[in-house]
Image (cartoon, rainbow, N blue to C red; front, side, top):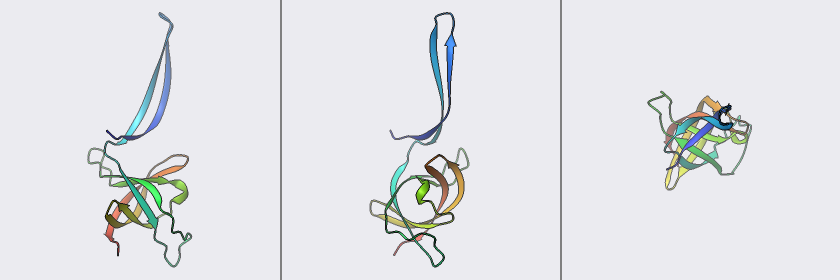
Length: 120
């Protein structure tokens, strides 16, 4: 089983009776079924970045329980706000545009993703 999440809190509790230590970890589960994908940035005339580099990412399908759209988790260094990318998973290839910020860590970002068209 694949699982993607983020640690949100760590608390240590000491019991004085038996002098035992318990550790509680709060984890925000993003998805139970992530898909590993490759992205390639699609530059335009006003593009700040030009690259032919394949970018590793995780595609997380829509989460109806938390009312979240489909999202991508990708390296922060490769993120271009409102950027367009080619998304590849096996033989499946589509264009995807990035939307609103959902979550962010030190070196990663989770953003809404809209599949727009089939790539040529």
